[in-house]
Amino acid sequence: MKRLDAPIARTYSGAASAAGPLIFVRSTRRAKLGEWVRIGGSGQDDRRGQVIDVGTEITVIQLFEDTLGLKPADAAITLTGETATTVVGQDLLGRALSGTGEPLDGLPPSIGEARLPIWGAPINPVRRQHPSDFIETGVSAIDGMNTLVRGQKLPVFSAPGLPGVELAADIVENARPARGEPFAVVFAAMGITERETQSFVSRFLESEVMQRTVLFLNQASDPTIERLLTPRVALTTAEHLAFTHGIHVLVVMADITHYAEALREVAAAREEIPGRRGYPGYMYTDLASLFERAGVLKGGSGSVTQLPVVSLPDGDMTHPIPDLTGYITEGQIVLNRELHQRGVYPPIDVLPSLSRLMNAGIGEGRTVPEHREWANQLYAIYARGREAKLMAAIVGSEGLAPGDRRALDFVDAFETKLINQSGVRRSLAETMRVGWSLLETLPRDELSRISDATWASRPGTAKAEEASQ
Image (cartoon, rainbow, N blue to C red; front, side, top):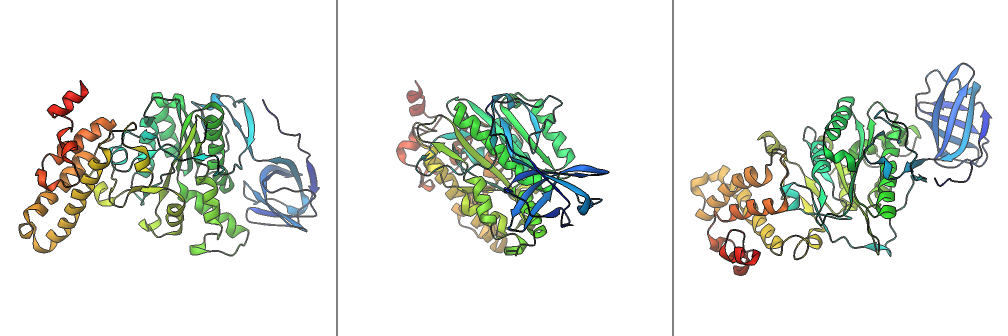
């Protein structure tokens, strides 16, 4: 195993003061941001902490546990000289770990191949290759309408009560690259309940997907500071698998909102001046330090793709967390409460959803040549039907033009046949067939986005059968 230079520990007697999860220490030497700290003392249980601010006179340490019962004047504070690192390696595949990499599956800690700092950097733009390869998630509304591309960061926006995390778990089980290359999933859960933890572990252990998955599970009862470390530990693991072993890695992070709330809590404890709605002004930069670790390296054989789940506080798309996430990432998958209440799963609303890199990952040699025309036509008819639905609420369906009535009927068929999958995986070919069957219910002259050549060669026609032979 590769080893970092041996750290030098320094122990100090007594702290100046303590406030909430913070303790303040005077006259420390060579303290480093992110340095691990041990706090003990006579008759006191050892506590863990991390340096979060270094000043000329005062060093601020964030404790992983509460300071209740801690006597600052009697505390022995040891700055270990070590910064946050994690064990990485292929032997982590198939493991369930805590948010900081400790085993949760009853197995011994991994030896790994190396121990690396978790504070990684975004990929150098000069070395970044433009994403262009399709990832099949098994979800029709994503594969067909808002395609995920290798190296992309595509968040899922989910309001309270909607199955954003469940959708992410489905994608973990069903996602695969188009050409069968080495593929792995790193799942980073942040702020989840004990029930959700057991659900994820049992679900993945019962499926074959666990063999190529690493689970990092940070629970709501875990210390706040660990929630800030979990995605970085997961991304460091993913980067090693991708850029050292040439594996295409999908990183699912759920829930970014829990991460941002932990960031706000730490900022409040440090008495920082708050920004929008109490969140720190540097939240954009902090989120970017996570999301920009996705990508493909020029000349490399691996990649890191991100699928973050963002819970919308009060269902508000303009809230700082989804708002800033949308600026950094390349689109969004939006879940719809009305579809969820009608039993449509996954309840993805394709109209506000967007994959900005979709065009780079579809078409000849990647999916199918007619993919763009097919998706454009479905969008056009569905959008017309949604508008007709609003108009029908005012004038009634009898007052609509014949084309609008057909589009109105198309809305229900599209949502129940293409969007709704009831948890069953669909291949891209199956998704395309369902879409074509919906379009065939409409008159040919209303399908203005489909060329005559594409229409003649669609699946099920004589020309398509000739081409397949």
